[in-house]
Length: 298
Image (cartoon, rainbow, N blue to C red):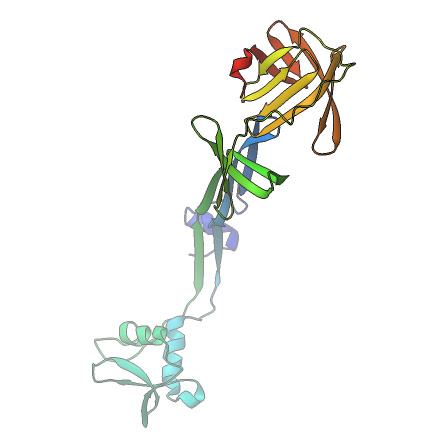
């Protein structure tokens, strides 16, 4: 086959793009806030760890050079000290390239290609003579496709991070007992477990303030979709819990769609939130709640 490099593909019906598109990586994280401060995270990642796509082609003239000619010429040199070898039969009647005629050890110049040429190509079985053939042109073409991909799907469920809460630090998974009175925390790193029991004491409830403003529509118990609860009494005391993990009592005052709160943990902490009530629906700090009976509070 003769021609320039650009004609290789046409001569061999060789198809392939030299600059194919490669889609190497994509990922995303979906975070769903189940309640204030608590999230369920789902992460997906795809990346191509190995790309085998390759196209390579070339052709040109050889001007007489060939592998069989090189093997022939090395055999004609007859001595390893001059870059060749001495050809003779071994005990198995294979032609071997020796160091010299007087040194029956294999020459370092005798390669596997030389062995193949001398035993299968150069020697004519009819007359026993060695011949070589000149090379005129060569053609090389290779096209390969493929890849190795990795897919990862990770979820982070029922996990919370604490900083000096209940006297423990770190990341934990949590599980409630059937009666919701015991909480088991499992350290995400050490797998050690800590059990906490609900202590029914009201000594932490603050006394209502004399000037607290009360909105009768707000008074009562409320629950959101993820297990968070609010309770506003008619004296100015507010109770809040998030999935049974945090229990906080506040002094509160509600007026003109705004709740002002105060708690002591142990220092005084003030806060505020906007709210609106529509029948049995409460929007509090942009979260949606439904009215429930106070006996349903956790």
